[in-house]
Length: 161
Image 1 (cartoon, one colour):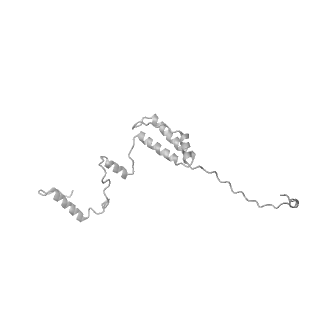
Image 2 (cartoon, rainbow, N blue to C red; image 1 turned 180 degrees about the vertical axis):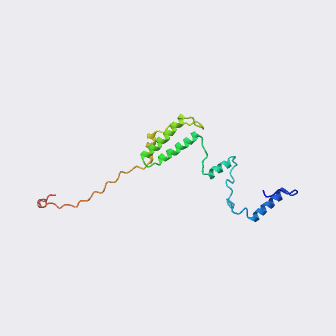
Image 3 (cartoon, rainbow, N blue to C red; image 1 turned 30 degrees about the vertical axis):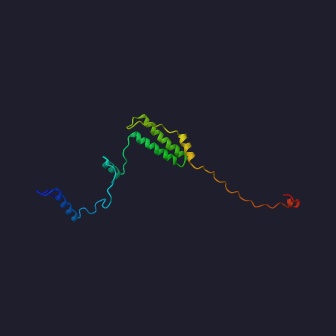
């Protein structure tokens, strides 16, 4: 604070004078966000706006309860399995998430009930195969055209092929 409010001066005129003097000195130049719209303008008020802003600035995600985080990870794993290139990769992804699901059902985790059973590996692989375009077998190498052999002298003489 620069100075105390003098007696007899209204707060409004005293504050306006301080802002004007600071502006003349250039204290408001080069502030971050200058010329940009206010973030979250027009959105309904959220009591936890400052927490969400800090998480966004630090590139963090909102921490989920254990069971919800496991459900989210299971969905992401199924999506990753669907995009896998090889069947072995699909099986590995599903096996890893199944281990986590089994571990999660054994432990008491925070959040709502898990209600998640391990995935059937064969069903996931079957679905993966159906989504993939049918693999065409590699084309056989073109057969070499053998030059026509001349008929032997004997066959030419007899007139047979």
